[in-house]
Length: 177
Picture 1 (cartoon, helix red, strand yellow):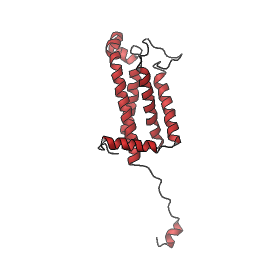
Picture 2: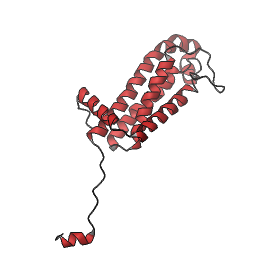
Picture 3: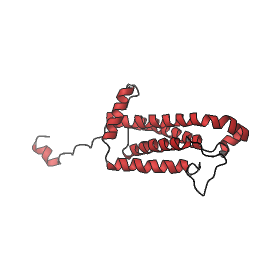
Picture 4: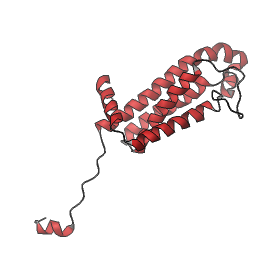
């Protein structure tokens, strides 16, 4: 799919692709959403569990951020049920991967993240990183949405059709082929 498609045409193509999905694709999207929610929500303790804890309480916006990230992650995951064109696949994979990693950092406890602690220290994590986390969350959602739209629009613009069945060899000889 060309990135020069206007926004409306791209969105229209994405909606067309979504409407054409079968039950397998929707179940895959649901499973991908649950998997995304667990992979991000459990280690960040947004989903309470006995394995991980937080030093800073979960913020109100962590729940909707995790829900939207999970939904978009599931959609992107389901687009891989059928392979897209290799160049488009790489670009949307990059967007989706970056969006997922940013979502993990966005909803995580600011002082539980070892990378943030090493870079900023405890006081920097609370005074510098914590206020930026909602912005990081929005950026991650936008990247995941862009990946989903690109992959879906690519499906509608370049649908994969099965190759026509080849004629048997003796049928070609009978018709002069």
